[in-house]
Image 1: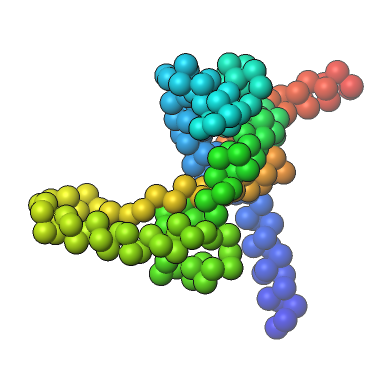
Image 2: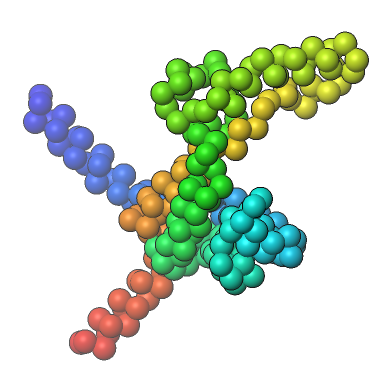
Length: 211
């Protein structure tokens, strides 16, 4: 009985290998529009982006801000397109991961972990990358909602979703970094990426020449 179950398990795993390109595809389809949009936003307001990259008071204070902004735009905009195609997947994840690390430590780190301030979360025990701003957000949000209920059309204002306090923590940047890291190891995916077919074509040509 155990032997039969083990054989069934192994056969199932073997068949699932035919579908191991799907996780890579899903990650690529998730990340590509995020990166393309981020790159396009920077490109469409390039002067403001470069100023933010270079200003030490209210920006990142990076040297050569125009160059740094251009590199970030290229990484996100063209990198997103390459992710969508599954072309040079492992290579393109490297500059994108660097971009996410810069965003994590230069932009979001001081805000703690959560992207949205939520003191009801299990993270709100004060030990996991939170800050005073997050812990005080509930009181401020309650005050804002009270004002809107008294002086505004509260139902209309909440028709598209409830109001939240944007904490702008490292949550999204770290999540994207982990997804990109996974792609670096997995590649574009079997059958479902340009990389796969380029590799297959190249291997067939090399085998043909070797015969």
